[in-house]
Image (tube, rainbow, N blue to C red; front, side, top):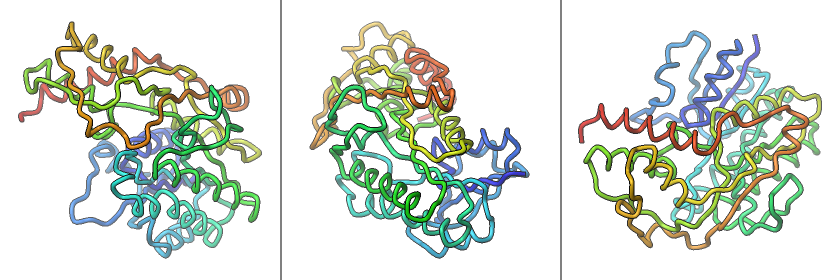
Amino acid sequence: MKKAFITGTTGQDGSYLAEFLLDKGYHVYGLTRRTSTQSFARIKHLIHHPKLTLVSGDLIDQHSLTYAIQRIKPDEVYNLAAQSFVAASWEQPVLTGEFTALGVTRVLEAVRLGYPKAKFYQASSSEMFGKVREVPQRETTPFYPRSPYGVAKVYGHWITINYRESFNIFAVSGILFNHESPRRGLEFVTRKIANAVARIKLGKQQYVELGNLESKRDWGYARDYVKAMWLMLQQDKPEDYVIATGETHSVKEFLQLSCQAAGINDWHSVYKHNPAYDRPAEVDSLVGDATKAKKKLHWQPSISFPELVKLMVEAELKLEAKTED
């Protein structure tokens, strides 16, 4: 039985990855931070699975990581944990650096010291491209991050390459463009829109307040993207890959399609601009070229952008219909 160690198990990607690996017969070990109130909402349906073991530890505690890797001796390590909300990275830049940058080094050190045979996956991000140097962005595109989060992710990306080249560790980075789902955190714009539109439809609120509507992203489905992570670690040679749909859509389009999915005819009537949500340094447009992943991993996105928006809005309508304010 293969063993996998996941940091960020309780997050969107971690929960989908845990499901995926459990279905493949893995024993999954999920790292969780010790807090007075645990949040297992995304994995509550998995919590009693006989092949899921939650492990206490923290990305800022080297000993807990090294001890876990030494004890478990996992075949695969997936580092998904991070301070991943871009807006918060300006408010907490040092904390973002500790988790999103140095946290990667600590996990890599745990692998190097504890079980160097493990294959390592690092969750890199399209935010590393920032003020883009070419369109579309591919594995060779230079980075120009525009937020503390993007800067921290660039560090994590390059330290992964450094450990691969310095210590002969099977270490790869997946440069994942935006990937969404009903499990996305409410602070992220896609889930915020889907939830707000559902609440407006049900008479629970009047407006959705947003920043720049013209910002464009390459949005895919998170469940598809965790499969790509796994595929990267099944290869004979460690390489980095861009994972993206190759399409770009604006925040305005996401809002329009969300209203359409909820049966709201005029999106203007439910939208308000709030400058508080404008970024200090905006990333105007991101779109990825996943040609390498399609060719070498045989990976393809499974659903379209309109289907993704509809899936998220329908999930929010069901959720809000059951929830009292």
